[in-house]
Amino acid sequence: MGVLDHLREPPELSLRFIAVWLRNLRVWRKLMLPSILGNFGEPLLYLLALGYGLGQFVGEVESMPYMVFLASGIVCSAAMTGATFEALYSAYTRLTQQQTWAAMLAAPMNVDDVVLGEIVWAATKALINASAIVLVAALLGLVAGPEALLVLPVILLAGLAFAGIAMIVTALSPSYDFFLYYFTLVMTPMLLLSGVFFPLSSLPEAVQIGAQFLPLAHVVMLVRPLMTGGSIDAPLLHLGVILVYIVATYWISAALARRRLIR
Image: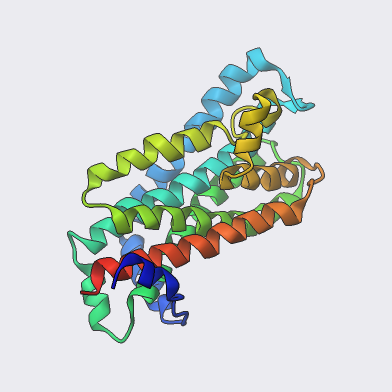
């Protein structure tokens, strides 16, 4: 079957993906401390270095201190990087080097179950990373109040979307080097053009329009008001875009994984 034949076939949904999620959780628990330090340290460093350092020169952005503005953006970027690295390097290692996927497929589950389990697990890692940043931001007094906890379900949805995109790359990748194309051509531009470090309104109009197609931009537009006590403009639009990414990327990544694994 060609890739178009697989794309026409909808993924088979079942609760069997939970077994994949549990397997990855058990393995992660053995390496939990260094994993948390690695994923948590970089965004925290960005928050403290840019927030305290650059914040002294920038002053206020959108009527709030730059440190407060940046904290919500760092939460979103931590979710993106957490989900992406898990769905790229870790999932690819389980697919190729460790042959974990092959062992799972010997059990009563199919490729769609494995892909969904990997995506949900990567979203869980995104939630863990972002929750740690939210906690630090709260301790530093950078959140408006308890309503900041509402960002957690948004982050989980965002993690599913970013993990789905990364899983497409994993299903296509012939080697680890292939991931550099994704980082250079997709992740870095999305990080810089989604309002994480500076407001979208400061960019040219054409770039602002293009940013509306990036999932990270919609995540930022949901998370920032929740953390800073502002009002959300068009929340259904932002959630709708994220949900479209979740469904479309799971569908495509499952089809590509089926083409790769089913001979």
